Image (cartoon, rainbow, N blue to C red):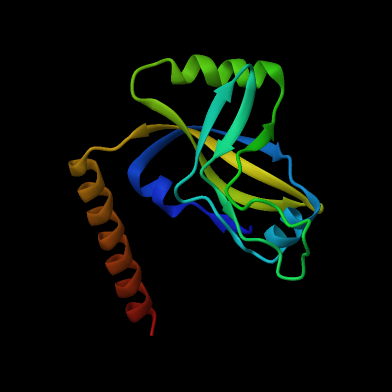
Length: 147
């Protein structure tokens, strides 16, 4: 895994996930392999039956020349037509959006996991935080009991 969108897991309930390919130029894939990609502010948009990753940042390659890429350009995501239609139907419901969850390398190719997400309310975030803290305390107590 190259990068993960922790903010998405904090601010949204992820209802459905899909692995998509991403169209990158030569210097972009080199930067991704170095781990120089961020998707915390990114979102996915559907235009003319195509998926576009907007708001992601891939730092220009350190050894690149004048052929380096624009770090903030929209990038096309690759998915089957029926998967895109399924996503379109899902986001037409009130309160749903598509967010990138993680970028990973699979057999040398960059993949983006996207998710159909529903926004959390403030009390949902507090409850998730309380559950996470309780689990951490239980795990700590279990480790101490084993010693």
